[in-house]
Image 1: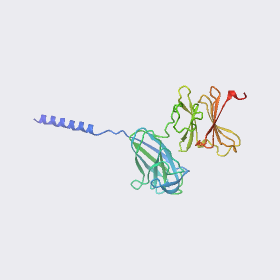
Image 2: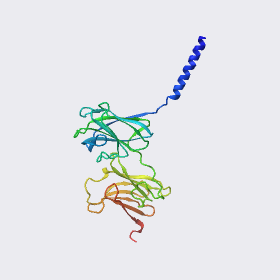
Image 3: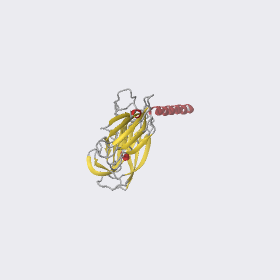
Image 4: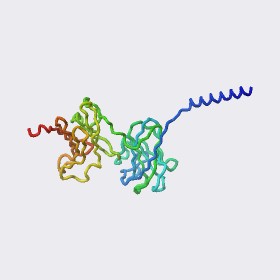
Length: 298
């Protein structure tokens, strides 16, 4: 009788354990820590809940993305060199870009203090979307150089940095609605998109197009850092790429003309060259001129 009771007890225990294994879900979570330093650049103003509250705050903007939809925690776990140690350290979450000149643009979450010290944001994030976690100290005129450690943790893998540039451009036989800057302006040979660099500043992305597959591949990324500090006195080649069928070149044009910059694409097999002229890398005033090298002088 005692042996039978022990056996029944063992069976019951196994059943309970099996039931617990069924009803208790398993969660896959990852965590990434990174260190940062408040830079010498400042945001135009800071905020309390994404609204203006302070001015001229040194900041650090960290781009990142995740590979799975779900709940994530973003927090500061250490800070040094800031007044009152970690108190009044702020973090804010932006998507899809961060603009230091407009602190409210694309701000989706903000926190000052959690439990009186390090800030924490709990947020549902989407896979393959560009996010920026911005960190700063909420005292006007605080000196740059303060350091901190942030942690991002959640349901999926976290990657620090910018989303990879697409390896293909949309098919060019269809009228595009994808935001390209040169719609119907030579986009059978090259496609130009607005974009962002690692600091969240405006950039221009130039793709070349494979004529057989109608697929595109990146040829050049033009950032604010590539622009000359002062107007140039003569046309100056700043960047060049030979990855396309023809060369892609970026020039600063001599001061005094109608346009400040030019991108050349070509010549292709048939000798066609596209010249794209504009005044800033937003490309909003972009125009195109086309000529054929083989026909020059006819």
